[in-house]
Every structure is written in C-alpha cells, then in structure tokens.
Image (cartoon, rainbow over all chains, first blue to last red):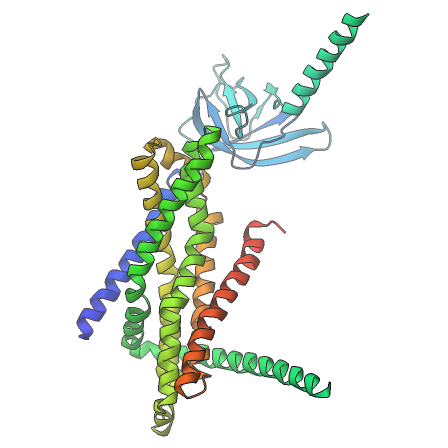
Length: 158
Length: 260
C-alpha cells in the first residue's frame, strides 16, 4: 500500500489513542477537580474519626471546600488529628468554625462538615479547629438503641 | 518406568530451553531497538498492521462491552436505588480491568497470530536465512520494528477500548435506562482516580503489549519451518498469550490494588 496512506492512518491511530487517554483523564477521572496543591491547611482533633479517609471531602453548606489530606493519632490526647486542605479562594471562614464528621446518605462515605461561627477573624494556614463533633458509628447507635430497648422490656416485666 | 522419567525430563528441559531462547531473543530485540531510530518508517508500517488494522475490532468490542456493563450493572444497582453509581461501575471495570485485559486478548488474536504466521512463514521460506546471508540481522530488520510497534499500539488500543466502552455505558445508562446524566459523570469523576486507576490501567496495557508481542515474535521465530509447524506456532501464540495476560493481570492487580 502507498506509504503516505499508511502514515496518515498511523497518524490518525495515534491521535485517536491520545484523544482516548485525554478523555479518560479529563472526563472520567478526577483530574478536572484536582486542586490539592493549592490552599491552606487546618487541623482538627476528633474523638472518633472512623470511616474518614484521606481525600474525603470537606464541605460547608453542602459545597466542597477542600479535602482531608492526613489522618493521624495523637499520643497525648488519644484523639485523631485530621489535617485538611481548604482551597485558597475560601479564605473568609470564621476562626470559631466548628467541624463534624457526617455521613453522606445513610451508608455513604464520611465527610467533614464545617459550620460557621461568628468570629470576625478568619482561619489561617496551620490553625486548629477547636469545636469538633465525632463521627456517628452505626454499631454504637444500634447498640445503645438495643440496650435501651432491652432495659425497657425487662422493666416492663417487673 | 525409566522411559516415562526420561520423557518427563525431556519435556521439562524443552520448556526451559524454549524459555531461555525466548529470553535471549528478548534481550537481542531490546539491544537492537536503537538501530530503528534512523529507520522509523519500518515501525510506522508495523504500527499500521498491528494497530490500525486492529482498530475496528477494538472499537466494536469496546462499545458492546461498555453497553453490556451498563445494562448488567443497572439490573443489580437498581435494587438498591443506587443506579446513579452506574458510571463508577462502568468506568472502574473498564479502566482497571477490562480495558487492558480484553484488549490484550483481542490483540493476541488479531495481531499476535498475524505476527507469528508472518515470521514463521518467513522462516519456513528461508527469507530470514537469506537476510542473514546478505549480512542483515533479521532480529533488527524484522523483529525489532514489530516489537516496538506492539509496544506503542497496545496502550493506545486499550485507551481507545476504555474510552469507547465508557461512551457505550453512557449510551445505555442515560439513553436507554434513564440514569441522570449529571449524576453519571459526576459520580464517575468522584470515584475514578487519575493515578490509582488510569495510570495503573495504562501500565497494565504496556506490560501486556510487551508480553503478547514478545510471545508472538518468539513463537514465529521458533516455529518448525513447515506449514504444520507455523500453524501450531500460531495456535500456541494465542493460547500462551491469553494465559500469560490473565496470569500477569492477577499479579499486577494484587500489586496495584491489593495493598499487600
């Protein structure tokens, strides 16, 4: 076959393959929302951070402001230290913002929900969020519910 | 009894001999790759014959695999009211597993068997010996361009397979069963990671491309130079490539996603 036609076809093939890779990167994966390198870092201590993972979302009012970048255990206070990176455009969060760990849907993934406080100063890089609420563990809740239920049941019989 | 043992020993030695010849061939091909730089036209022609000519089967199977994944995933997910997760199911299954593996199997059947038959026939008709008589190294002139072409074509084919499959899944999910379009894409983008999923998928397809092309070229050059020998070598290429791809896929998956 004519060399020129062969070369054109190979060019089309390589362009199509690159376009497919590009589509996978931009349209299918999270590259378009990949902003981990910018922003400022805040930490928060939770009594219980079960279910939270690195790269879990951090949201306020239902809008994602950043992601969890690190989860560590603090030997002194015996609590989980969660580090999150907030995008730099959201730099007016009040200093007394509180953080809680919520579940998206009943069995969905865990995320950090922020609630604004009333302070006029705003959170800076390296600040610590002091007001926190731990994640809700389904087993604990069911356990409490069952034990309460059993107690009522046995008190009825007396 | 002794005859049985002798037969077993002979077979075992034969396997190791072939393995050794395969490794020597692989080494010689890699060492011969640099001679292709001034003659890249050879590679372009081979990319045409292993890549472009495989395009139709890859695109069609990718489309249908994606559509079937969409339908089957929907039937299961709708019981849990989680049909919005269909995008995740389709994209992860394609990018991590089916894209590289099915492409490699089709590639072995479409391009690998053709490579073996071509090289085997060159050997049977003594074209390779003729080249050596003219002081042309057949490894550098015939095998290295084909190897490099397989190395280039396979990741591109796998990427095309995955992308077309995602589009096929999209047609079924949004067009046929009525999943919300925004939820389909946004959930997919949320769950598929560029490094963990897409890069690892590309690495897999590169490994499979090297292995399948290597097996095909080796079987061709190692074929018994008769028409029956060539036909056996072609069969062996497809069988061995399929086994190697599936076995390696397990190893690679365990390394990449198994957290061991």
